[in-house]
Length: 206
Ligand code: SF4
Image 1: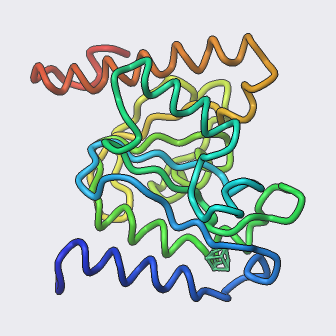
Image 2: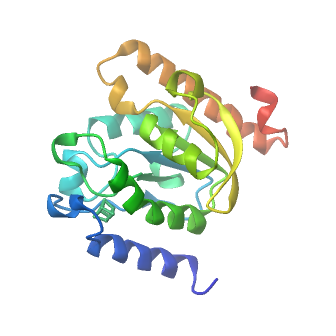
């Protein structure tokens, strides 16, 4: 593998900034590559940038982002310690769902991010991220209600890691019940992390 981690990452970010591989480039204000630590053990993958993210070129900075930051804080993590990105790097107009061909066009960037960062835990936020990451791992997506809170060992982009799935914070903004589920899932994520620290297997908790 040639070049330092930072050099590879900067090259990738530059490619994303110039990308015109799918129709989303025509309506974006700013592409949103992702941000956080390149040494992160935990990488979060959401769906797509929203309005605020598109304006600022940063992931999860709107209301859903505030909730994600709060959920991280509740389990003792800061945004700087993790890496946060999305399945597609440009905003779908009107916040519509990303289309399959847009996801396919953008996926090589996510694969390269996973290779560069090499996280131990890949957290999927929402069904699009879950379905896509399970697909990359060669696994059948069981649906959000079954997948959430579950940890699955897998190989994604050549990296041996654990996939942990939960709901997208945007879905919980106006749904208190779902917010409670998200909080429970994040507590499981914390157990997963601290379990590793004590040398226990990841699945002692599930
Ligand atoms: S969404 Fe991805 S593939 Fe489409 S233009 Fe943006 S960076 Fe390129």
